[in-house]
Amino acid sequence: MIRKLPSGRWQVDLRTDGRGSKRIRKSFDSKAEAKRFETFVMAKRAEGREWNPSKADNRTLKQLIKLWFNAKGVHLKDGERRKRCLDTMAEFLGNPIARTVKPTSFLAYRAHKIQKGASKKTLNNHLGYLNAVYNQLNRLNEIDFDNPIRNVEMIRLDERELSWLTVEQIRHLLKTIEDFSQNPHVHLLTRICLATGARWGEAENLQLRHVQEGKLTFVNTKSGKSRSVPVSKELFEEIRKHLKEHGCFSFSLSAFRRALDKSGITLPPGQAAHVLRHTFASHFLMNGGDIVTLQKILGHSHISMTLRYSHLAPEHLSKAATLGPRY
Image 1 (cartoon, rainbow, N blue to C red):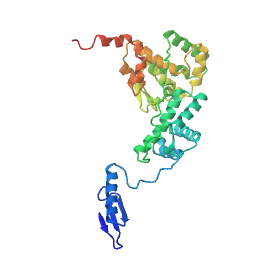
Image 2 (cartoon, rainbow, N blue to C red):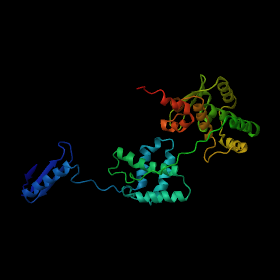
Image 3 (cartoon, one colour):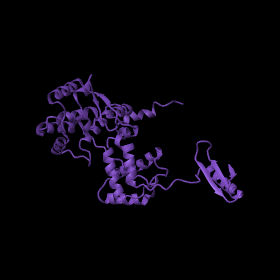
Image 4 (tube, helix red, strand yellow):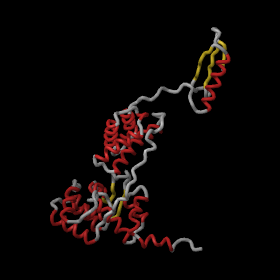
């Protein structure tokens, strides 16, 4: 609406989206100027741009990290660790105004970390953490600018070698643990991982209430979802007896690593106890198991993770050539 004021000036008084929306009022010396302003404001509104945009967001990267942590990170298992990583990143970048972070700045951080020996996988995680801060706050309408590093690409990773133990190696490893380890838990934990494909930490977390009805229930897993896996009657009874006698498993990974070294079995870097999980998965498929069931046993969120083992089941996959539609 345009109206003439008692002073003789002309006032534009309008709401761009009707009742309840933002009100704009401005006075001019002539009605023509007022009309041009009204036309300008409505044209900008049609383009999705405000006449009087809000003040530039000058919060620092650390301020946004703290905001993200309070909104999301505090609920994550590794939220505290992620926040420490993000704060370290922000300090390296000079704790800039968050909206002004440049892709080249993150690339400089990444190059520095690679020179210091950080793995490509770790640095992809770091990029994911920083992306999550911007994207989460954008979804919550806490920021009104785009993620400034959205176009930075992840580092392409070579497929990791999955090593697994043969039956002879399994027997040799268990005998080595039996003969040389003083830890009362490591032999049984090794067999639990071999029998269920559990991660070492998942097996260590087992308590008597998790060993029921012939199944082991793994909780506090990597995916956050509990899963139950049946085991043989003999192993089930042995686990219950062990937990009744010892209360619970103690940290035994170091003992396993020492026994593995003593066995002389060589593995790719970073495998250690994880080879037990790979061994279960590999033997499961080679003995006729199927990929979908294996996914459920291992607790993989995505089937793509399980498909890494598919080359070990050529007989199973070869059915694709014979069981499709005939025409």
